[in-house]
Image (cartoon, rainbow, N blue to C red; front, side, top):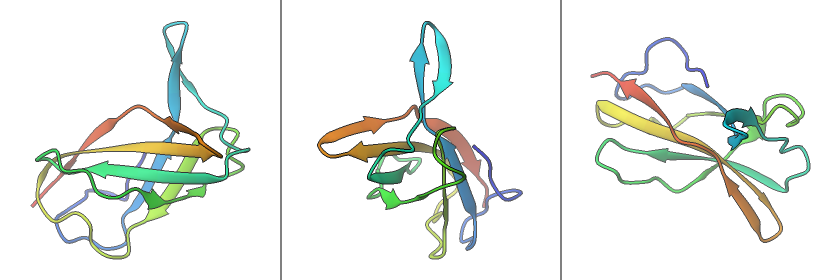
Length: 106
């Protein structure tokens, strides 16, 4: 996962890139999500409140599990430790990736 420089409260245009992963034989492994019908990014605020999942796009083909979203509304409203994870949906099957934490500065 990567971010544009330092994320600050009120930033607009932050690019969020997630790699949807799962643990296979004790190793974190990217999930091939190329055949999914919907990919989303879920974000959790420092107080534990989860924002509604945001529709994302494949960064490349989805084989590498990488998805991305550009924040155009300024979702980072408070400083602290935020979390993000990718979600892949195919029909009624929903796969939620591992959470990844990051800091948002004032």
